[in-house]
Amino acid sequence: MGSFEVERKTTGWAATDPSGVLSPYTYTLRNTGPEDVFIKVICCGICHTDIHQTKNDLGMSNYPMVPGHEVVGEVVEVGSDVTRFRIGEFVGVGTIVGCCKNCRPCKSDVEQYCNKKIWTYNDVYTDGKPTQGGFASAMVVDQKFVVKIPEGMALEQVAPLLCAGVTVYSPLNHFGLTGSGLRGGILGLGGVGHMGVKIAKAMGHHVTVISSSNKKRAEALDELKADKYLVSSDSARMQEAADSLDYIIDTVPVFHPLEPYLSLLKLDGKLILMGVINTPLQFVTPMVMLARKSITGSFIGSMKETEEMLAFCKEKGVTSMIEVVKMDYINTAFERLEKNDVRYRFVVDVAGSKLDQ
Image (tube, rainbow, N blue to C red):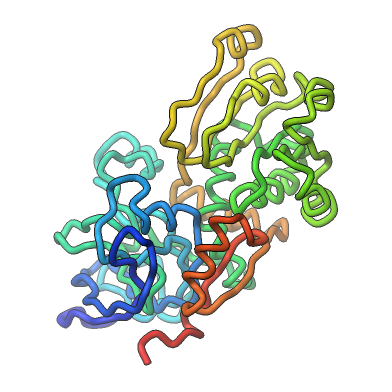
């Protein structure tokens, strides 16, 4: 255990205005407490949300902002009341770092739905200090929001699982869609979509990738081992696939019509929305009424589900497909991500970027 009398400074890369351009920024870590874990960051994945937040796309950004919520690191010190972690262990931190602990979601172990949840970055912690994310040398996090990484998993491969991986795992788990033999669709083949294919295949599902063009057909079928590939503009093939899927995980983060995809669902099928879209979506009600279909949403996953997902991925050998970059490449990586020019997740080698030197 360490002493937490003195605040520590660390260096990260922060956005300072809505241009979203990141540059080095040194700041003081919040005071640590008895239930806190002091983490040396090893690597951190880049999520599309990082772009939304740094560019103030949601109108809620505060600067300076150090993004990053797919954080993998090593425990350096633990508080006096920390029981779950030891110095030297490898751990992960995801999208949230705080909750009220008293509401129904918190008491039901789905704290990601707490109305008072505290985001890993671009938020204010209980001590009034801003939260800063994983594109930095170090973080201090309440042990409740730290997850142990199973021994033997490649750390850089784990980073995207802490957001993209659990985002897919959680709704499949919650809605009882984990049994083998189900037929699922993955709409959009980006960071979350590629994890959707991998996790659904590991569960024994027949997986159809649905995309707007043929561009990713070979990747979907040959590399990710999807069973089928549908181009949404091919009306003949879409019609042939009508009433064939038990669920669709919709990862598309921009406005798109829902009706073509609702038509693919069987009786009681579920369209699960995951893309952050600020434009209202539309559908005609008979599309859901006549086959008791559901349009629902899901948001990341709980800490319990994150632990389950990591154990599942280790058992099944599920990994993410990544491109590792150094911190000084991060602005280029953001630009490429906006163009979908990555297969399928960037991971920043934070420790290797030597930010504090």
